[in-house]
Length: 243
Image 1 (tube, rainbow, N blue to C red):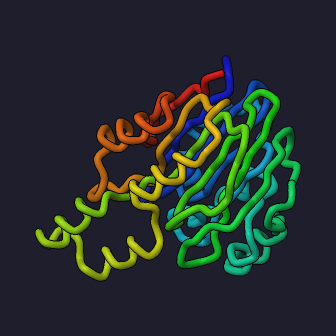
Image 2 (cartoon, rainbow, N blue to C red):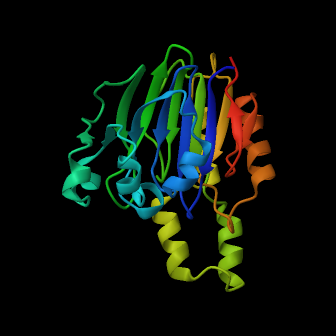
């Protein structure tokens, strides 16, 4: 079996992904209950480590539970500062744009534009190639070459969001925060238009809003740009990364 991603959760209710190679697993985010994570884990593979992008509960809310799995946790200083002492001892604070070895994975964190300190991750593994992970940001100003796979936020469509405000489905204050802290579909497309796609195999859209997005329409809009298979992350789904 090739490298795959198990989606434990993706969205405001909780985020967690298990990136599996033939021998090891890298956990991305710790925003889902440990029981849900354990139900999907392959315990025949070693847990190389846990990457956490930022401190919000839907990404780090279950980090104390996850720390009991015994794997090292890699994140930023803001996440570490809010954790209990016993969890802090498991945490490695990453330096922005510096390569960090996490088992057989090589990880480079970079800064995103959220309302708290937030990291994206460039992840390399010999079985995977280069995977770009971008969540909870209004934009991404970095350029990347030779990407094999992309997991990127496409949180909302502004037209849908504004219609939901007009219909009193979404409060104005919530809409304003969404616009200040998450990536709109147009911005996701603009970023992908500038990506070197010569080695790109697939794209996974993550952290889609339940109210302010349309899965199939988002996937089709992005597919027209990248020309490779595009999937929307859904809890309980396992996706095999294309070679």
